[in-house]
Structures are given as C-alpha cells and as structure tokens.
Image (cartoon, rainbow, N blue to C red; front, side, top):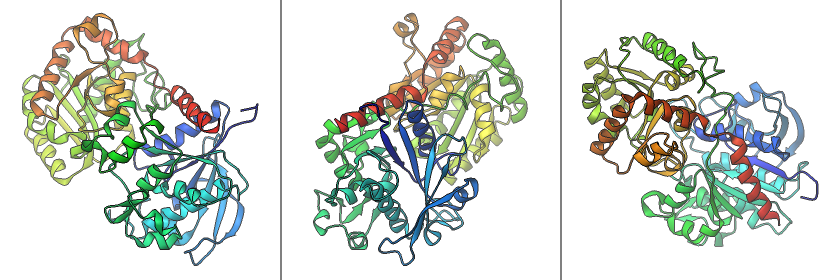
Length: 485
C-alpha cells in the first residue's frame, strides 16, 4: 500500500478480556492484534459497557457528538487494550450501555428492548469514522455480526468518500430483527425497506443490511461459507448469499496459541508437548481427582466443553451415553444451556457416579483441564460456523470426534486407513445428524485408542498443526487489499 500502513477499524459488540459471551469476543481480541503484528494500523470500536469503562484507562477524544434519535450527546473515548497492543475507541453513552446485565440481555436473560437503538448508535459512530469525520480515518471498516450490520447501510446512503466495508458472519442464526420503525428511527431511506435491501419478512434485519450493502462478506470457515448458501443453514438469507458468493470468503478462525499451550498453561498441573506426551497422563489423573472419578488407567476419558443446546448436538449425545459407558469409558462434561438438557445430564451423572462428571456453568480453568486431561473430545455439532475447541483439542493431543460441518470439516482430518497411513489424520468425523452414527464414530475412536502406536501418531499429527491467528490474519489482509486496489 505504497509503504503506508493499511488502516482498519474493527467494530464489534464484545472483545475479550473486557466483555465476552462467545467466540466473537475471542476473535475481536485476537484478529486486530494479529493484524497489527503484520504491520496494519488496526483499531477497535466498542460500546461503553461498565466492564469496558472499568478495565480501561480512557481519555476523551470527542465530546458532544449529537446523533439522532438520542436526547443526550455521546462522548468518544480512546485507550489501549489491556495487553497494551491494540488501540480501542469506546462509545460512552450511559443511557444505552451503562446498565446491569450482559451486552445483549438483562440479568434475567431477557433481551434489552432497545437493542435496535443500542447497536444502531454503535453503527452510526462507526459510519462517522467511515465518512472520515473523526480523528482516525480507516480505509476498511470490518463489521461483525448483526450488531454492526447497519454500518454498511449508513455508508451506502452517504455521498461522501467513505471507507470500504467488510461484513463478517460468526453465526447466521442471530440476525437482529426489529420493527419497520427502525428505518425512520435512524433516517435510513425508505426505499431500503425492500427485498433488495434490509427488509426480511416484514421486519428490518440488521444482519441482512450488512450482507446486502457491504463491499465484501467473510465468514469463519470455507465450508460454512458453502453451507450458508443452502436453506438448511442460510436462515432465510441463502438466496442473497448465493447471489453474492463472488464477494464471499470463508477464513478459518485462529486460536490464541499463547493462552492455549499445553507446555505453558498455568491451569495445568503438568506441562507437556508432542515431545513429552507421557506427561499428558498426569493431567488425566489430576482431572479425575478433581472430578472425583476413579483412576481407571486403561479407561478412555471423553471430554465435552459446550453450550447445552441442540446446535451443539447434545440431543444426539444423551441417548447414547449409557452405550458409551458400557464400553468402559468415562465422561467429563462442562457446560450450561437448555434446562432440560442440564437436568438429563445430571440424572445420568447420578446414575453413573463413577463414570460421568457433569459441571453446569462455565469455568475457564476447568475447560483447560478437560482439554488437557481428556483422551477424546466430543463435538457433534449440527452446525458449527468455525468452532475453537476442536483446535484446542488437537493442540493438546486430545483427539476430537466431530460432525462434518462448517469449520469442523475444515480443521479435522478423519482417521481413515489411508489418512492414518499418510500420517495426516487428526480425529474422527461422522456425517449425519444421527445418534447411531455418532455412536459408531465413538466406537471407531475407542478402537484406535487401544492401538497405542496409531493413537500416538494421531496426537502428534494434531499437535503439529498451525492454528495460529497469523495464518488467518494474512488471509484477511488479502481481502482488504483486494478491496482497495
């Protein structure tokens, strides 16, 4: 780019470690960081939630920004992410963001009734950067999920020179649907409310706005980019995505290889690597002690760290748990979600107290210890845009069992006889959303577990894979540069 740094504003509703509800938070921290390491001037834009204001040292860069329909002006603050690497702009607006609860829901789990306004205003501030009306003048505005979907629309209907926009889909299932009054609320031209715009079955879809008006679309794996062009996964937007597939790129997320490193993980009792794999078994012993499971050295330990929802395939797992237990395996499950799934898992744990441990909730320390201590990691998602745990598992020498969908298909190489012989296999893959096929895949994995030489090779193959953000970030740079040429 003529020797100058390519300027990117990464607009997001959450970013680790400030606020995180899922994988978007991890991406919003790691990708801008990786872009800066590649020499780009990448910066973040976030809402001023209490957790953000409390954790950052911020100074004001703009005051009295008047944005209709707000009654009070907002302030734009700037600071640096806690790691000291990435600059971050914060939209300070107490009436929208400074409240108890999460970024999208109140403390009882109910969606904030003014989410259209909250994230519409975030998008309007991003558009001010795109119009080059603020101090930082990005060439690319990188938008993420429905919460930032109005950014491309605001810029599309502005005649001024503007930044190019990239819209990233992290999960098609969440679209940000609101009433038609949003059009008038933000002064978006009425003609945008059509099938050739942001209208979706009589409502305004923030996600569709982003997909329709953005200069380029990305999603978090090549297979998911194909998946969302069919009705099963496209959530009603498959036609639009098929029309725009020449401006659609799938890029697999990276993982934080410093936070997820079995040789340097503060949560583990014993460090290990591919050169010291026997030390992994000590983490298995420690995990069993912590979860009060008997030390059955020859029994495989199967781990799950997951949301307990149908998307994650928990309804496929529940019917076959007794069959898995009959093989002699143990299970360590961490997660929360659907109350019925939580109750059924706890009932099974009570029925098989020496075979199953179930921890309801989320625990970062235990999630690392399950990845290190388990022999097998179960991830039978019905759809999975990218997925991170299968990559954590391979890095930790824990063999994943996954369904062939989305990012799972792109990252796990099935242990077929040919792939085992060629030393490229890293896990076990099944095809259909079917409990019987999942059980067959588990049994295939358990058979390989008993073949110690094959199992060790599977572990080493996975641990050698490069899932760092450096590789993914370079692909995003290629997208940015192609838009500016």
